[in-house]
Image 1 (spheres, rainbow, N blue to C red):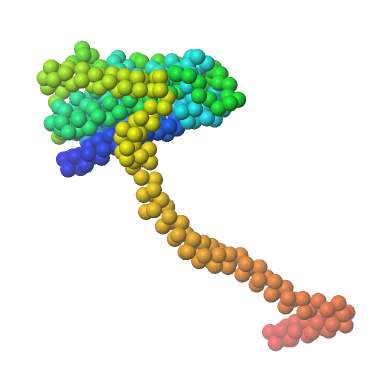
Image 2 (cartoon, helix red, strand yellow; image 1 turned 90 degrees about the vertical axis):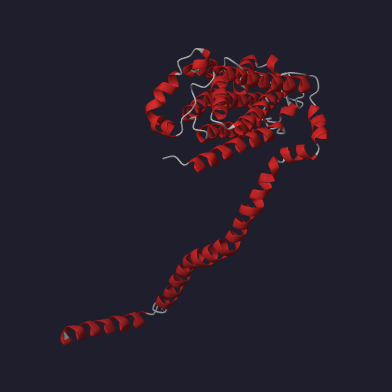
Length: 362
């Protein structure tokens, strides 16, 4: 049977991962780092779903997330390629004029991950939030909704700074649309981000929840132990669904309005949040914690023990010791190489005598 305590731990870890990673994404300026922390946040949603017993919803979000996040990462690669390896969104701007395909596919995927209906992210993320609430975990719903708002905000902050406004490129930069080998996959993935959610439209919206029924044999026993309230009051589901859309719209509006005409709005945000912004931009000092608690101790251990004892003494000792042994052995044999024929003849005679002696005595 499934352990309620274990499920609770999984849900807590998932919820915290979703909100913490989303908050870090707000203060990042590297286009790939924004998407990287976005991915971590979405993984948190998936584990939140598992923790509240919404197994199909978790799998569903894995699938839809693959569509729009792959498009976003490939789109960021297209931007970096066009900007000659520039990754700082503060040094971009106005790219939609030069990269229309990249822009529109990136925009569609951003709407999808933000949870705008009827795109794929709306159906999967909303199902996770609804089932978190329906299973009696309102705190998880609040955290998930907060992460959803942050997701919409940092995504459209990134879209605005990258594609809208005045160009802020470095001198000598000449952006251009990527070749078809890069844009065709973007179009395909953006299309999947549009239609992918219809594979599991919930009953509350008149859908047949096809993915849920297809996966039912896999999760039937688990859902029997931890029943999901699929037949709860649809009125509350509609209200929460509408609220999640409002959250997405609010995040979209704030991300666009703050940065559309003021690319330096981060400074305003930084002055408003103060130390909180510093903590977010430094990723809750997690990197520093890793360095001090894991990386630096391992480096010291490697230097003092692995390098000095294992590498320098044992490995180098074996290699150099073998060379020294062979050299000493060669020095011994060198004594017999005198270059005097009489000495060689004496040794040959001595050898013959020894062999004959062995034969006679044997």
